Length: 348
Image (cartoon, rainbow, N blue to C red; front, side):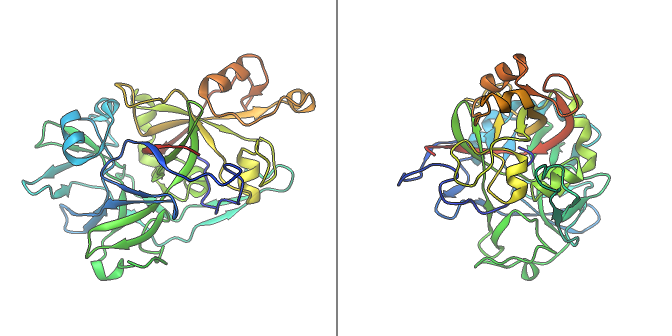
């Protein structure tokens, strides 16, 4: 769900009519979801590097089922396939649950900059500069060596700063010190409010989070951390497929609105489609392999372009030639990887 920009959602762009939003199925149960604010509140963890720097992070997913139940995290068994990757960081956890990481630094001082392309093709953007950048050793995935090599998804929220520098309990955080997805953060309460993202899976509305991407363009579009070191996860089998429409219908209030062109124009999120997600299963992973899909000129001229909310429908449209890869041929991987833990399904 790579390209879900952090724009506000225009009225009517998700659903028409006075529908009361509610979570119908929540997977990340450690979080408290507030759909009125479109945030989820998660526990804020404070750890450190071996070299002494403070690491502020959250935990969202874990490879071990028992640990997921104990901590309210999403069970992501596929993460176990990433435990020996170069990009998977090493850590130890003490009896109180405190993490000490061997490596992985993130610089939050850059200013995010996103400039859309020229109409009518707003994607790709002219400029995409991420607001935070991981070093050559940073990945959100962490293997805990003294706890059966369990793999956690532990994205960094802030780095090498004291609590007084990141205390924005009432919002308006300083994005020079925290990741751009933070809505508010309160170290004294050990909580952080993170902005929810919008997409679809199995024909249903999905809310999820976005933390990291292995390309700077993807990270900028997702308002997340550029983490090039995580690219090797794509070859591990520890991924799911996410489809992103490039040139869906435009118009903030069009019920079929979708895609990167629309998102970059400022009409709302791109509304990506997680391929085959219905429930947490042995194949689930928060690490998503991005596949771009473009409507053909013929499909557009014949009025066959519509909003797609199910992976099977997108694959059928690709199989019949209505949707193709921008690079040519059938829809396929772009080599872009995003870290997007699911939060839950909603009724709209």
